[in-house]
Length: 163
Ligand code: HEC
Image 1 (cartoon, rainbow, N blue to C red):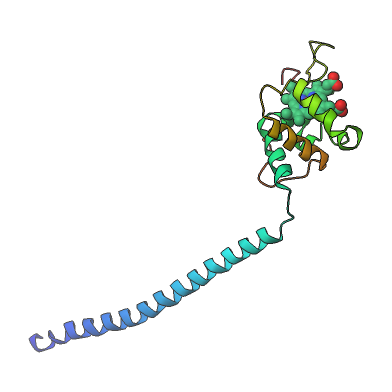
Image 2 (image 1 turned 180 degrees about the vertical axis):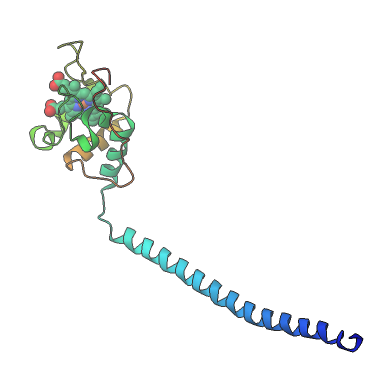
């Protein structure tokens, strides 16, 4: 047995070399595949962004303001209504109201004095800037399009008039 003991480290050494010789190329191949996969995804993401329909910056900004300043909470996502029977949908105002009329309604509110127990259109002129009002008008006039980054939170239903 003593004469065989030197061969064990040699055998182990050979196995290690084999192991390393197989592992290193596998690692390199794996890295290359992983890396090229990543760059393919990145390229895909870039091209899909590039092919997405362009939204006018003012309209996109209006879509964000529509969500941020609770327009969507009363008038529904993208102004589709359905939140309260007392709050109209805004899908038709692009054709029924002129930009100046929209600006006046947003700046000064609407229906406040008619019935204090119902939701009314709040006054926004003191709250948001003129640019923000103009962006909202652009967004409404553009037909309240879906803007991917401006998703409103879900509107609660059957929560009573307080909502
Ligand atoms: C508290 C709920 C509420 C919020 C928030 C709200 N509205 Fe209104 N809005 C109303 C109500 C109610 C009316 C209808 C008023 C009336 O006709 O007496 C209305 C009417 C309007 C109208 C006129 C619609 C028409 O057919 O004549 C426009 C335009 C409008 N809102 C835009 C907005 C925008 C833009 C925002 C966000 C800045 C907003 N609203 C936020 C409740 C709301």
